[in-house]
Image 1 (cartoon, rainbow, N blue to C red):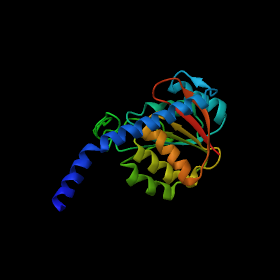
Image 2 (image 1 turned 60 degrees about the vertical axis):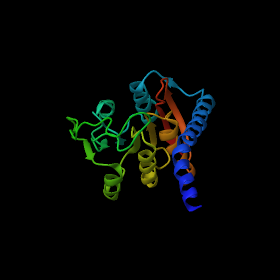
Image 3 (image 1 turned 90 degrees about the vertical axis):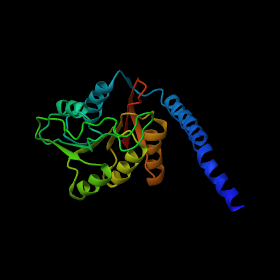
Length: 224
């Protein structure tokens, strides 16, 4: 009997995970679709750059910011933010391992988005890059970091684990009025699920501000 139970256990591990994952994916896809319908009156912008401009001009206004970006890659979005907000008091921090994804995301294998450890070049003294896995670098960073301006979190970390870890770690400084931007909010089992799990676990609420009309689901929220 022990051998028989062991055989069934091994077969179950092979047979069930994929159907269960598929069901989970379908359920969360439905939740994403419902979220889009429920927020049909949100401002809908044409691309990522337009979303950033909207946040800067319509939400932040004439003020400095502290921007923390998770998922820098080649630095394009950080460069956009540095150009959009040129207040000398603004501070920009980019977090990335620069070794690519640490685990599978959607159909992307580990290592996707790697720059082989090469950090992008910036000509802006207000900007600092923090290289390494978020789980290794964020806690030491936060032990010394004190927000001085309105906080903007630009999350392009893709993975559920990375997104949830960062949001949970940032909870104490995500005061009302802080802005959180997602680059792939429609990734149902990753950024979407992580943000909803974070809000449920920490009893937080967020107000949607605007979204981009594309398949990625770039969406901006204000914490309340």
